[in-house]
Length: 299
Image 1: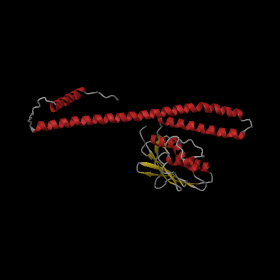
Image 2: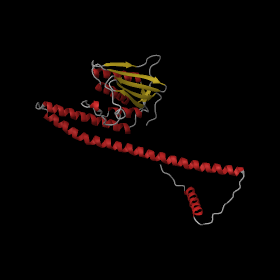
Image 3: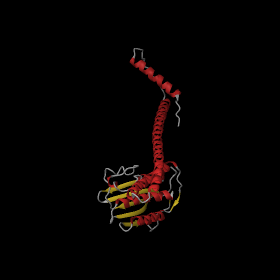
């Protein structure tokens, strides 16, 4: 966006300002002028002055918005560049390490090799998640009709198989007086978002804890909640859990890339929705994903 300098407006203003300074603050004669005008002319002058002031104000606001947009776009470009470089730098050495491990896996030093292989696989997952996050910011999203109840039931079944019998899993989806509405979005990405949240709940809870997947319609939105009776998140960390590569105190010793919730937030935002979190220590956590039912223009 380019701005044109309107010299025909700026030069008279500058001339008037300089002339006023000279007459008021120098020894030059500064006679007093009296102007008479009829009411119509007076109102015209007021209207013209108000219009000029409005134009100047609108131009200033437009310039301010332009600079804010430039700063935001530069931040996004820098972030994409960082993710792309990190993905490239990690992928090649990981491939070489995996090939070397395959050649060494001959029955000796099995424990050491398995430990190294586990770490390599963790890095591989990190690279894959980084690639997904980078792709989310660049590639277009397919907006098709998504049957939300079916999607949530599929996520729930997968979570049950992941959790086994150690945890109590509950699913609450309204069926009366009508089911959840169909929403517009990318089904695979929405599945990944809900799955990442409930998978986190499984990882950070203990045997005997309860995890609930529930959803309801509120006006023009659908709210999906994943609640658990796990250890909760400290207040000092709740604002950071959506950041890339962030891992809190409770995550130490638990496998993960630190990108799960960052991916969730990116997916929901690309669908015009919002994410939020409520948590209490030693009581549990509720993560809410809010999606519009009317669809959203591609972002």
